[in-house]
Length: 238
Length: 107
Image (cartoon, rainbow over all chains, first blue to last red; front, side, top):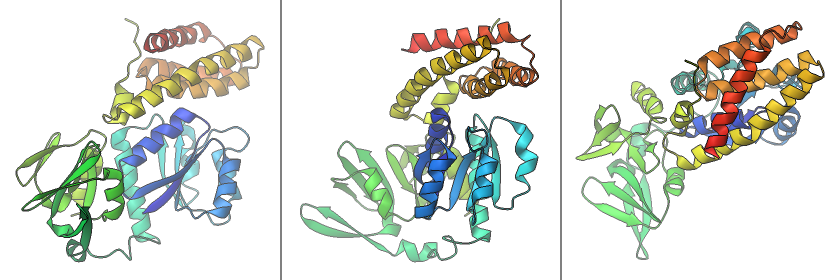
């Protein structure tokens, strides 16, 4: 999981980046900051892998902020001004330069650049278990005070239904009192992803993809527009 | 025909998340009037370089609200203001008014 923070003096701009990050299972937004000074305090006490950084900010600009960092993490610059793109090439830890307002499709390219940067560079992805090993890992679910063991590889999808989630496997379904958010934390990103606010799927089980839906087993599951680029990106990695 | 603000971009980013959409619109409703006020006050005091910085922020919102021509106008106006040129003032005001009217309708 890549831990990131967002720095932008405009609340609307921070919220857009945070919302786009929500579509990526392997990005975790730790905090949002309205200025670089507050972010510096946070960086002194916390480990951060990636920063989405606005260039035009009062007091300390994005580039001023970069100059203060002794050991900079990866950075994605955001700006509504093309003029600084060339300056970004000066720094090898700058992964991408995003023009605001940020387009969903363009952001999926940024995600792939981030993944590539971390694969080449340092942490996380290298030590990840192989997908085949993960298929055999167990997940215990609590139903009527019984703990039932499921193999991750048998799970096809999970659907949110009010206060419950329905876990569908190759031969049965289980209704569990929980939320998609909670179960998502227990599932490996390399097998599962959320493609709609009510659905998490095991994307190794996909049979077919149409414009706005995927077919798994005999179920057609909707894909939300914001999650589609991320799904396509993942499938390209298979 | 003058272009009209729309919510297409916000809906695309929200991806069906109505809670986000609502929260985001309320942010725009709060931020935009404040930025417009700041811009007008700086312009009145002839602080053109500072007003260019506010135009820069407003420019992003014009893009968010699908105002392609308004966005392009803001790019030119921001640059002009840095050089003390206010000839696009009235055109820009027209864009600001259409955004304000749109926001009021959403409230």
